[in-house]
Structures are given as structure tokens and as C-alpha cells.
Amino acid sequence: MPLSLASIGSKQEILKIKGQEKIKKHLMSLGFIEGQEISIVSELNGNVIVSVKDSRVAISKEMANKIIVRG
Image 1 (cartoon, rainbow, N blue to C red):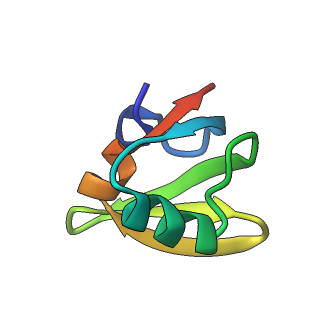
Image 2: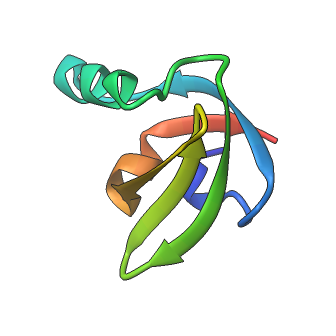
């Protein structure tokens, strides 16, 4: 399922990142790597705050739709 549909606070594993190579590289530079465990901290103004690699990162819902996770 896309990350944007995951519940706040639930731990998720990244299975795949969809989209153009430029988008994939940008997300990977933020720590979104296949196999990485992440969780949604909150949602604010159409953005998703995600905990990844001991950091909090804000991404748009559009970007969150490109990250496929398993809970």
C-alpha cells in the first residue's frame, strides 16, 4: 500500500519507491531506502511527517503515494 494510506504511528517497511529516477534519488537521499523501517508521525496541511533513520522528514502526500510499504 502507499505510505499515504498508512496509519499514524504504525511501523512500516519500505518495499518499493515508484516514479522517475530523479524522484527516487531525492527520496533515497532523505533516507527512504527499500527495506528501511519508517513510521508516520503526523499529517499537517497536506504533508506527511515521517520518522526515518532517527530523523523526521516532511514530504507531500504526492511523494508519499510513490512510497510502497508493508505494515
